[in-house]
Image (cartoon, rainbow, N blue to C red; front, side, top):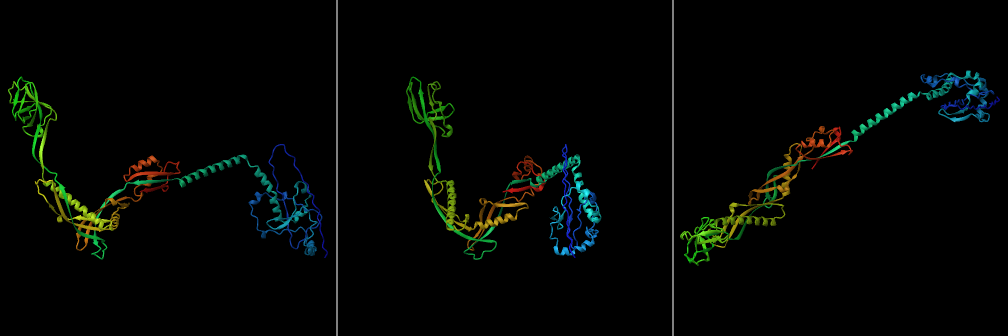
Length: 544
């Protein structure tokens, strides 16, 4: 069967231009309607010389009308009526098989292949509705299926919707802008609140008062040479009993008063017209009532004066006088104002006559001194001999002390010698081992909420309780002290009472807690000088 070749005249598209309005209006761009012609197996191109022009506007509904209706599935749609008759289909079978539409020269130049979601097809191009609408072949409308007309109507009324959107009332736009601004402000406020509670925090450093506690324990020390096995309740060490002795000579410092006197010099005046002789022991009476005597006889020339020696009738410190007038009570009263004596400050003095003798007080003092030196000598010798141990306890047994003195009480000597012997008990051990036991005991006695800070090594004392030198066993009493502190602030501070407080309010709160010595607070961020409103954002730390 011969193949009929169909040709189609090119469609002349007339472009129209609109007159520019006087006032500025918003230009609405109409959508360009397109029709896809897809090659279907077994069908031939439409015949005839008439151009295929479709009235697009009249057959489209608005998108708002179609949005409310649910389109039926493709399978349920009615088949689209072809653009040609069945007779033409039979005549084009051979041509379709042989040529496969290879000759595309006769196809309208405005038609071109487009890549869309459904596949490759032909487009009719842009059609000016105002001009070409008059050329529509209404006979072709009958060949269009209902589904095709619905699709054309949908595209036609898209322009109507764009026009309606462009004409939205300006008042509605203002409302929308106000709502948008309000929403943004609320979001910023909420973000600020979230930022505040998420980032703001305060760290409070507390310096608590430390307390001193003391305790004691008794430890058995076993001599490692005499005891090969050390029990669990004992420590290894050195246990010894050592005999020590020492001699020392002391100068005699004690004196005995064998006599005392008050002696001095005075000037005797004779205002009489004849000499005045005075015998030894002649009495002189001072104005203060002190009685003195002339040591030697003297003859005072008339109208002259003589310096003479005197002494107190009762020798004592109370009979020392300064500048005074002395009279001679043995002379006639009429002569006492003409013959008299005068003393000056420092001319009359008190004196004693002594001798060096050994007293009991000095002997007792010498015994105490040599006993101390004996003990110190024993410690020095032990420290040099047993230097491998860091703790050594020495005890002098008083019941073993014997002393010898080469002089007696009351004996007049310039010096004397004392010799002493005594037995010393010595216990040496490791101080670190006993310190560990002391620390363990203090920690075991801690109350809840307290922590052990450390042992005060300067306040540890050791004392030998008993020593068995033969068995090499000793008991040592250890007295020690340690420092304890608050373990954490949870039991000391109520964090609920710390929220939203400034630094002065924090000071008032911590000042009412006696266990707190000092505090320091760090705010974050630093410009916020107030604790957060959430308890979880407040952190407490103990500073040791």
